[in-house]
View 1 (cartoon, rainbow, N blue to C red):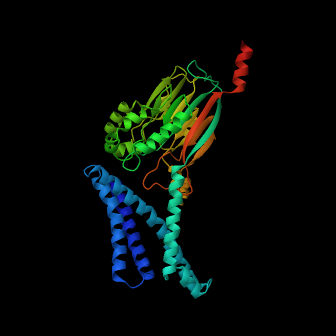
View 2: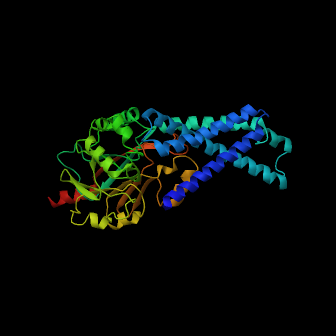
View 3: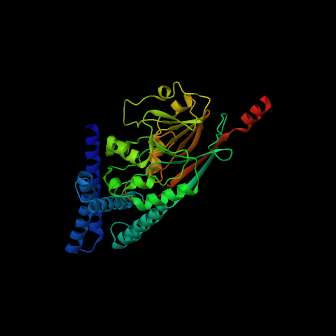
Length: 392
């Protein structure tokens, strides 16, 4: 009930912001009724597209749901930056009344009271989103080398280290489908990982488009001799956990839901249930009874309470969820909310990486953030190797 109230309040604010945009833009347009009606209709269509998608995406035809999602989320991003520019220009006009910083003629040329200002604003936001789209398409490879005071070599691993490829937040659905997933899998296979781990939110909001496009077949193309493992994210709960579990089984993905897997008799992968589940187990309970002399990798979708991992001597925690804010200035908000909203930190002996995600939610724009996949090269520390050699 509380979440529903919050959603309604946010949506009302969104509608209010759009009304403000229409009112501001109307002042900048020539006094042509048809033009103003056209602007109002465009804004109404942008709002309605996302609302119709959210309410009826499972009932509507597949292609129509895809279009509504694209139109609604694209407008949402365009609206946000246009609103930001409009608010800034309004603030400048207001301040200039009391503290003359600019001449009135200069302000009229470049603020909301002039058509030139509208043209410049629209052009800027359009170019910003085009740049953000291409930034989203580029997936950055992040390489992290980790040394542990534990044995990591096995007969199944080639070389002197374990290569773990880690991704999060695929958000496969009406926006992201087979073409992009195929490309991601090509990039994954190029890295020749020993094992692939996914920190939740594989599914966006419904498994319907995943089944429609037979995406479970594509996951079977991943070449990782030690397998593919995942934990649940909050979006798996939105899509329906049971349906997601069935999809993972068909895709050959090992789901760890408050459970532990001993991989190749050498290291553990621990998968926590998502924080959405208030009854999920604490880490201490999850790892009770396992062999702590073996490396422990934890998948936990939402990066809250990182100290819990450090207190329980987890060797590597991999999380996602934050998207690093996805677009500026939301990245500033995620930095304020989370101890580590993106990137690598170390707490005690615990290595922690929070990914900004390979995919995205909503419009396909990355502004001030990056889409990424992470390669962990994990090996036994040289001191540990020397110590064991000395014992021999």
